[in-house]
Length: 335
Image (cartoon, rainbow, N blue to C red; front, side, top):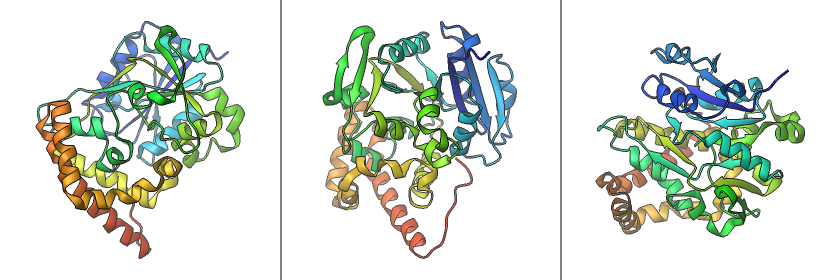
């Protein structure tokens, strides 16, 4: 008899610097770990990632022949046995020891909601060399920052969408079709696996569905749960060059592989505003104002690079769009 409550899907690839940080935070939960399975889906790591994963009794290791995290999520979903699935990156960790218990109670309270997003993602540097880490954590990328203008918490960013709640600091957020929505690709987003099997069983083997599953739930139910101060630590290894590679990775997915990245499901949320991003960038003044604002907000001089990141992003959007028009395909091989 299956008694798993949480299945935690963790894509890995050469993740030795951060994986222990992730798995220790799961092990530290004041929760019956016999009801938790950690699914480490590895894309062929050459370092000690697998040796680290093998140290934890609650972990099961799976192979991801296609390496990229999108395919790992599909493998993990189809292997999962838990009632709830947590999408957790290998550089993320739970901040407190009661995350799983609080989330289980929140799902039980809001029984007609099947998606939960963390309230806060807090950046923790791996070393002093992570020049872009704070920017990555706060903004994601220049395009996402321009579209969503995120605040420090989900509840403050989507205050107008709060429908009800307050007990145990758990709130229900409601969204109409054209509302901006939380980006719930990672950040330990948790969803109801049993609901998905009942509602979308015929689509659960499709990578485009799995990669956009959070948006599909929002489309279907119009709501999600958020617990105030539910915090995720993001220990990103984001040096300057590595961050530029991440930007290119996202642009390539957005242009060439929308159905394998979840980008296609955000069209309604992005609206027409996305077409203004080049004008925003070329103005120079507005990115400069934002970079100064971000520097003071996060007390990090590295935020001044926002202007450069905008131009870098715009250049590659134009470049890869041109390649797409010429029917020249571009594929990500690493992340």
